[in-house]
Image (cartoon, rainbow, N blue to C red; front, side, top):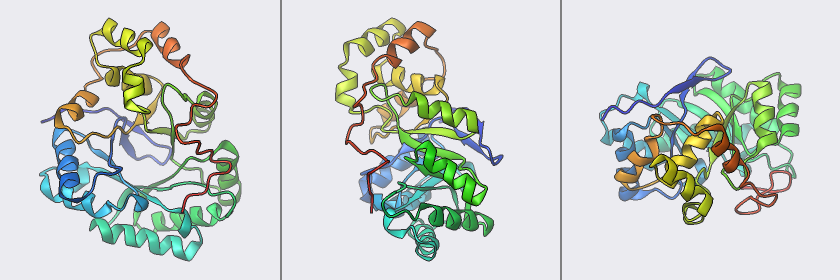
Length: 280
């Protein structure tokens, strides 16, 4: 299929689709089939991580599709236990070996791990890996504005992307505004939150009925209209197609505001506050 997903230009001049495909817990043969299906449906941005333990599955999926490597944007992420410079460089190399790739289009620091306080060192490793051609674009996940400011202050380089928890129950308005003001693209992990909760939310269902769309399409369109890159995951080919069929309608301002109003002060799904959370 030839479904076309629009692209945006990052602050380093590279392009990235505004909708991608998440692969968390997709592994083994079934996972490879699901990822290959997503690529065949038209997804071109594929998101994995060292700690997902499925970089090899992603690499295998690429061999199952006829889509050329240069048409894809493959992302992986550095785990917290490898934030020191030498370990970060080796972990990036290992990520490439696992996937059987010569380069990643995007590589991110998975969490800042502020108690360890080595994230600037890890960032310098990503900067150098980009110079060496191992990575095309570099970014982070779950970094608060103070973390981002420190990266720029100490290295002179701001991330191209910050991937953060973002969904209608936690809309990250202040974080998104900071990104917009500083030219950092926002990417949404768990964009559909706990799917069963949001799909059964009366407000979301009412808006979906108004547009003749599904709840997931309304939520993903909400992300798109906020300028956020969403990376939903589904092993179902039908759901994969449904999730990417969001570019032929638009939510009006009132409905965008209504969805924004669903946010909660304690909206994080797993209480993973980047100011204190440590990932290894």
